[in-house]
Image (cartoon, rainbow over all chains, first blue to last red; front, side):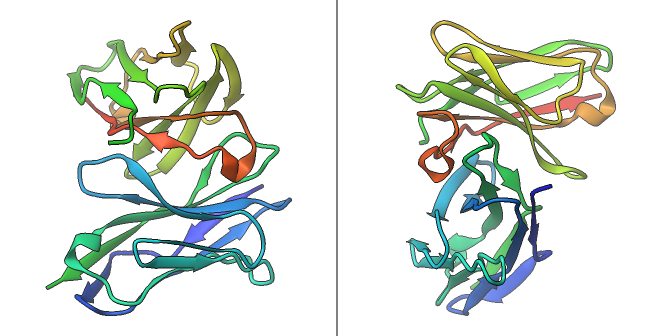
Amino acid sequence: GNSVTQMEGPVTLSEEAFLTINCTYTATGYPSLFWYVQYPGEGLQLLLKATKADDKGSNKGFEATYRKETTSFHLEKGSVQVSDSAVYFCALSEDSNYQLIWGAGTKLIIKP
Amino acid sequence: DSGVTQTPKHLITATGQRVTLRCSPRSGDLSVYWYQQSLDQGLQFLIQYYNGEERAKGNILERFSAQQFPDLHSELNLSSLELGDSALYFCASSVAVGQGAKNIQYFGAGTRLSVL
């Protein structure tokens, strides 16, 4: 079945450091891929998405590229801020399926 | 603000009891999804409704049920509650059903259920 695997957290970085959170997936078809972010005490917000191979999603300085050959969708940011501290979820959705399949989430802690 | 409203924010109850969680979707959204987020099982899809009809079922227990009303708000009913049902329950809404990335889901802030 479909699944999403994320790197375990927490990931702790200093402000202005480079961020990578790894995400790989298993899917039978050609899924769309998403990163959602959950700030403390809040619901999930869509951060970025990509719908087909080689697409790059970007938002708020974050980027992720849909890599079909490695079945990956790693999240990157060149210079993190304390305000980026949150839990990040990778997810996939197939057109034939209505639900989102989620990774376990990666907690990111940014220290000033 | 996502436009999805969930009530109540917190719920504390005892084992064996029954509770109802409520969700109002974004204006114009026809699809409502329910998710459970717990420490041991992460985020799990429970059930989806589209324009009043059940569309997809995930890992929803038989003790749980949901419905979507004509005004499109939805309720998740949890009965015979157990300690393990303590979790954060999220509702999400979207414009359409399916269609992959065109079907962006917008989440409410969640209802935190504590079963004592």
